[in-house]
Length: 193
Image (cartoon, rainbow, N blue to C red; front, top):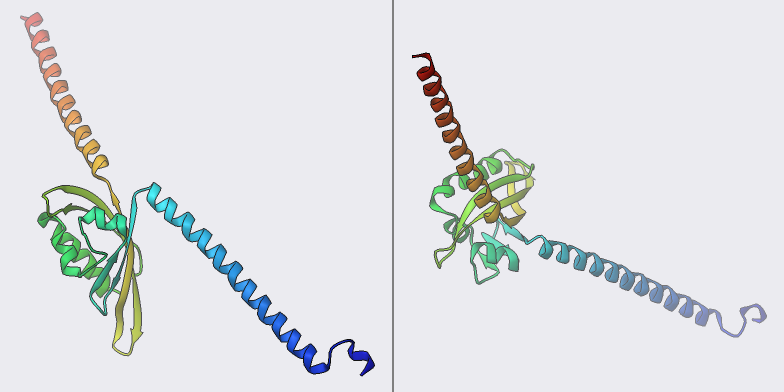
């Protein structure tokens, strides 16, 4: 009993067990704090880049949109159906969107899907979006079945406007260049006469 110190063997075991538990709780709290810091960083980066995020659950036919993605599509609620989402895509872009998505699902494609579509808001506002999607599948005896997809949305309306303006200016310069060449030819022909 002398080598046990001030505590009995049972008391030492209890103290050691408590110290282990406190250590594990401290490690978990530290890990949770580190995870929260990383989540805060990602959230700040997403907001700074106006990047929305979403997740689709194929089992429940639900698409969960963060605040930014809701704004990109003009939704009030955080969860919508796939049909609701497709209806918010401009009618001229719906077919391409559905075909690309369905092809990726049928092929079991796990590569990132990238699409540019116009979103049509209930108030009539139209904005261009760049969509990125990654599909997740489950292996079954019948083959691959889609479980979920995750992705991002980014408003590229300003970029599209800039591209359109550049294309208009390029066309105008092309017409001007052709007119100049025609004028030069006419001028040269007059000199020859």
